[in-house]
Length: 479
Image 1 (cartoon, rainbow, N blue to C red):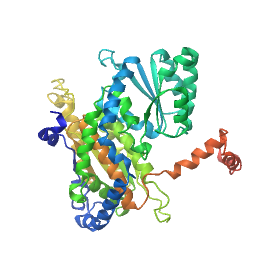
Image 2 (image 1 turned 90 degrees about the horizontal axis):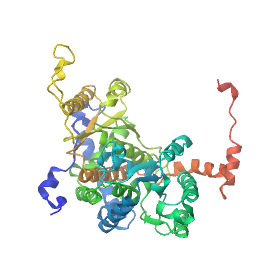
Image 3 (image 1 turned 60 degrees about the horizontal axis):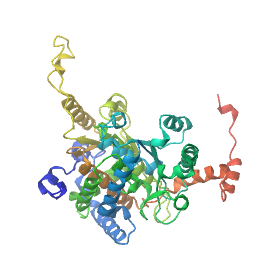
Image 4 (image 1 turned 180 degrees about the vertical axis):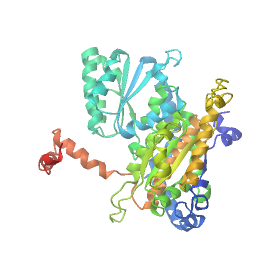
C-alpha cells in the first residue's frame, strides 16, 4: 500500500491552520477579525466558490488539475533518473515562477547543503543550481565552477520571450558548442516550454533538444507542480509522486464551500478582511524552519503578482493587494521583530510551524556557574526554536498584532504538496474576493516592453522612443 492510501498516516500528516490570534477576541475589534465579519462574507464567498468551480470545469484554472497528472509524474521520474545519470550538475535557467517553485522544493525536501555532499551522499544525483538572475558577476561566477562537459542546463520559459532566460540560454549554448561541438551540445540542454507554440518551442524543435511541457493555462507562478518544478526535483531525487498525493489530499479539503472547513478559503478570508477592514496591507510569512524559507519566497511572488492589480474586473481603479514580506524565525527576531511588535500595526503575520523537525540537537550541561548560559543545558535546539515561536506569537498577540499559524506535522513531500496547493487555492479565492483577475500580470509588462525596445527587439521601437523622451533627471537631486 502506498503511504497516501493509508488513512491513518494521511490523517497524521494533514496541515492545520490555527487562526486564534487573528481573531478579534484575542487582539481586539480594531485589529482582529470577528466571527460576525466572517459570517457576513459567506454569501460572497459562496459566489466566488461557484465561480471557481465553473472556471475549473471549463479548464480556465488548469493548475487545479496538476495533482492528477500521475502519468506525467511517472515520466518525469524516469527522465529525472536518466538525466541524473548523465551529468554531475543540473542548472536551471529561469526567473520568477520558472525558478522559485523549484528552489522551494529543493530547499524543503533535500539536505540543506545538498550541493556540498559527496556524490555517494547524494546517491549519485547531480548537484542542483538555479541561475535565476542575470547579474553578470553572479552568472559567470556559477559557470566558473562548472565543468560544461558534466553539466545539463534546463531552459525554462513558457513563451521563449523571457529576455533574461533567453540571454542566459544563448550565452550557454555558445559556450557549449565551442566546448563540445554543434552535435555534442544538444544532450546538455533540456527545454521546458509551451507544448505547441512559442519561440523556445521553435528553437527546441529546430535544435532537437529534449523537451517537457508547461501545460496550457498554467502561469509561471502556479507552475511548481508542472515539469517547471517537478523535473529539477526529480533529477535531485525528490519524491514527486508523494508531492502530488499531498496536493490531491488538499484539493479534497478545498472543494467545499464552507469557510470554516476549507483551510484555503478561510485563510484567504482572513487575509482579505485584515487588509480591507483592519488596515493591514502587509502580509508577513515567517517560517520557523530553514526548510520552508523557500516556500515563503515562492509565496511572495504568488501573492504579490496575483493580487497587486490596478483595476478590478469591471475596469474600476482599485489598486488592490497586500505587500508580502518574508521573514525567518528565529533569525528575524533579531532584525524585524522590533518593527512588528512596536512599529505600525499594519501587518498580518503567518507563522509556518513544523511540529517534528528532522534532526534533534541536545544541549550538554555546560557552564552551570555562568548566569544566562547554564540554564540552556539539558534542553535542545528543537525545544528552543519551538519556545521562541510560541513566545513570539504570544508577545505579538499581547501587543494586539494579529497572527496565525500554518502547522506542518513534518516537512516531507506529502505535507509540502498540501501547503503549496493550499496557498495556490487561497490566492485565486482571494482574487475573487477582491474582484480582480489573479492570473494576469499587466503591471510587469510595461517594464519588459521598455527593455525590449532598448535591446532592439523588432516591434518595440516605439518603447525605445518613449524611453528616450522620458523626463530628464536634474543634477541638483544627485549628490
